[in-house]
Image (cartoon, rainbow, N blue to C red; front, side, top):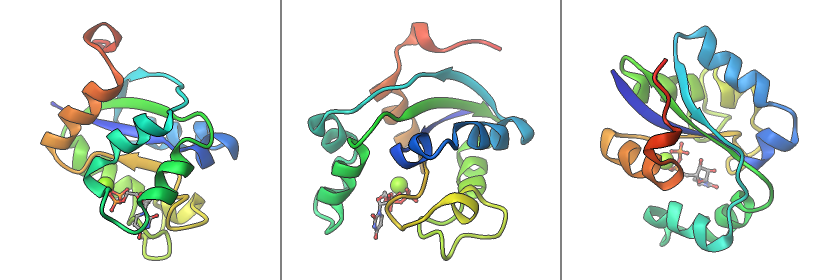
Length: 139
Ligand code: UDP
Ligand code: MG
């Protein structure tokens, strides 16, 4: 059993897509074992996306991620890191496969509704960024 971090980004929350995103996970045998709503500070967002700090989109991305509340969740399931990435679709929604969250809901390469960890190592770091052990639920 594997765990990953998912985030419904500020655009997903403000556009009323929380239920649509969660439905995709529940329909695909993925368990949500932790969930909350938080509003990141600029410092938090820069820390979370530190891996991208040299990229041209870093300032805009961190500003976007602090523009409103987000919903971080821990997802659990078999092969869930890859499974979540394939439910999300490509970073650029124009290149995302049909039926993926980003293809169906994203409006912009930046405002692409969801985040998902990309490896076991980043999943562990990203889960610990948002949650402590008392917030993780056996189901
Ligand atoms: N992003 C962007 N422009 C780009 C690439 C990425 O604005 O050219 C944003 C987008 O919101 C993306 C996030 O930065 O989800 C993190 O980029 P990454 O390459 O890690 O994509 P992801 O893992 O989210 O698919
Ligand atoms: Mg990424």
